[in-house]
Amino acid sequence: MSAQPESAEVEKIPCQICRKEVPLSEAKVFEAADYVAYFCGLECYAEWKRHSEQAGKLE
Image 1 (cartoon, rainbow, N blue to C red):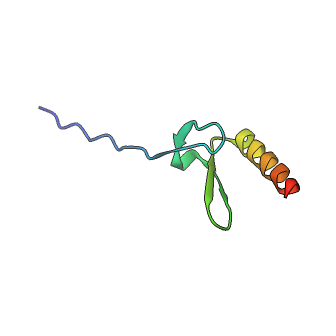
Image 2 (cartoon, rainbow, N blue to C red):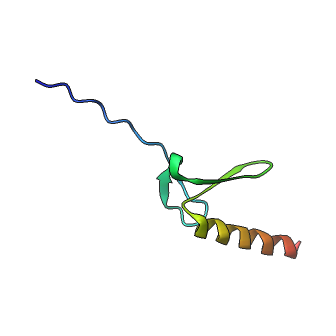
């Protein structure tokens, strides 16, 4: 009987915008003062940034 290597569980994290789960090693990261936000790609990051800027204008 041959020994098969155990498959390593890849840690995944949901995108802050679309909630698609991506491997943590592949996620785009934005570090804010109080938290870290993860994104599946630049499109979701741009959408998050646009919403954040609009919310800041309302305050």
